[in-house]
Length: 282
Image (cartoon, rainbow, N blue to C red; front, side):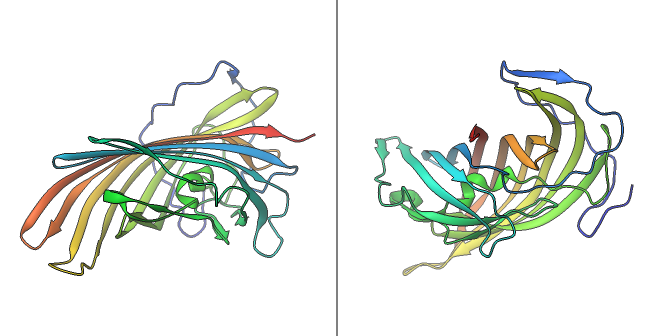
């Protein structure tokens, strides 16, 4: 099987699938090869995204949780991408001193655009909602941080269950005021077919590996720098008839070192993301 730029066929390591919901069942699916493409929803569709990140840096463990609901409409080919609206957003930060829920009311109802890449990978956002994080995590965080894993990297050619391919891409990765560039390699596998409701879905599994490096200038003292490694797994359930991902489940671990001059602090982050198509309009 040949593949286009950025997609390199190779033998992939098996990745354990995430636990399935009760409405999901195994299915044999078509026996022939399937061409996989992504698209904006053919009808108005609501998605739910949950994101939790546990950060341990020295003596100050911090967790943050996001919960968002957004609606996408047809229109991948329109200028600015498919129209979308942020319907709800909840952000809570947990520290040893207590928990804080952030006021996100100003962002709810904002409209933005999502250009869905047909062969997958990071999407392009227009007028993307951005929110501010306080305290130890101070900085700007964009909505794409929550939803970008809903777009798996796909091969150029039709594939059958068991086929594998590799995709590489870079992504900006902000940790508060620390701006990190992550270089990611994802080993992909067409793991089989599953039924979600009455929809026959392709189940894709991915093993994520990568590096992350970056820093942030300080008003006083030496620049803060970060260098680390990324490892994780992803599972997608893709409706091949519409090109819409009905479910994405991610677990990613990043371990590295924060350095400021001669001072170094180990840092470990565990990120869990789940994206679900919650409602499809008739």
